[in-house]
Image (cartoon, rainbow, N blue to C red; front, side, top):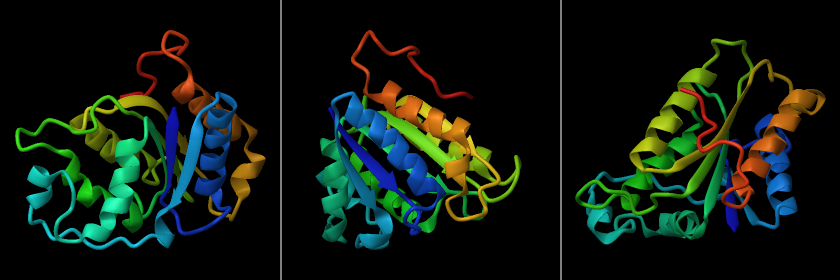
Length: 196
């Protein structure tokens, strides 16, 4: 199994990065091959909304994004880790998501249907600080693309750099999400472990 971790924060060793590393650690222990993609270090051209990618299955207007899109296509599972920025995911992740039209056929079926997805979110604020909205957005996109939800995590009050290291419950949950994501068929605890 190949797992692609998508790091949507530009802050290395920050809270979103720590949780992603913990989930990927569990995947490695399950025998998965893992790769971590730091979106802030990638070339992320803006989508031109030409919709040519829907027919081509790749971006035609800004082909440099195809390197990342191909990594997503080749992965069996994805883990997206994002802090909340203004009640949503980061701009890095949103730019990438805009290119997901390349995963949609002209009949609106998905070219990446069936892949597993786990979503990790962190927020500096309290309960109403955008984690619910961010998860809702990403889960709606996942549903449209027919991805299998394999876990979600919302961690709040993470305003200080790296403070999530002290949150043993969050670290354990991130690890369990990675573990569940990479378990062989028949061994997973739940068919769908994402809430509504």
